Length: 179
Image (tube, rainbow, N blue to C red; front, side, top):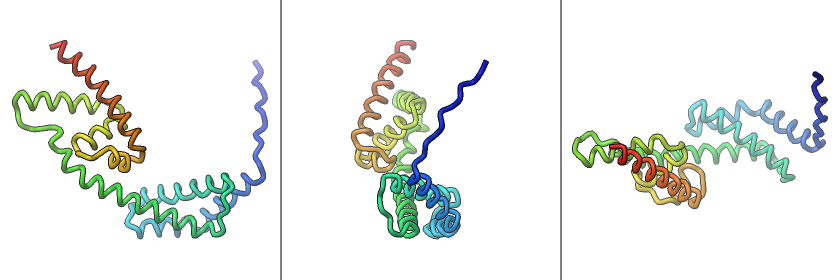
């Protein structure tokens, strides 16, 4: 059986130039951008991710036709902003994490078992729904802040919460019926 011959991939000259420019910038200055990100307080993996994200954003902007007069300065500014965003997320999580501890109470009694059942069911939800519920209900953050922490819109956070609660209602009703 013969395999079909794939169609040739057509790449515009500007796309090749943009990729080449970003690749060259990364080869020449990636190490210094990484060091810069580390000096902004990021761990090695976070710094590497920030540099990679800055390069990706640069490439996207060039693909959109954005004129960037000084790509190196642009990359440094973007890396700096990504580092500051990491710090904002860490601060937000530091405020929220202590509030999450009561989610799994250690005392006993009927209220405790109900709470454990609810949060155990929450743990089985898809990641984004679980994050939204923990931040909103256990962390007591408004949806606008939840959205900011996990990088989605406030309406998307509300939608995830609504879907999660609908799933929990069904799941917990089934658990109650089976008792």
